[in-house]
Length: 68
Image (cartoon, rainbow, N blue to C red; front, top):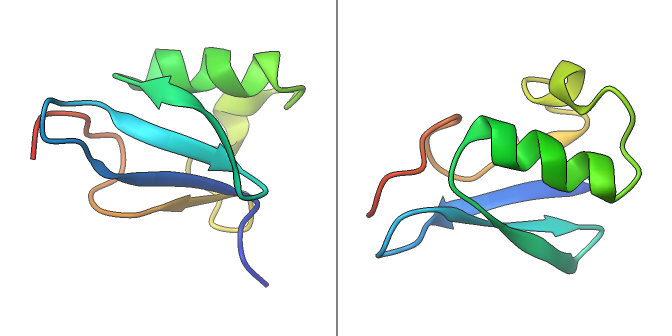
């Protein structure tokens, strides 16, 4: 089973695109931005799920947002 949330590879200018169930949810530049994005999307206690591979698939290094 694939995680419903994907934090995609780094963008050339920094930051990462986030998709939720294959829909673009937004673009984030740090973990706090990711938590806020997930909370706006209805994910409760989002900070608890950042390292849970059942919820979030990190493509590339987790918790890093610098330019590629």
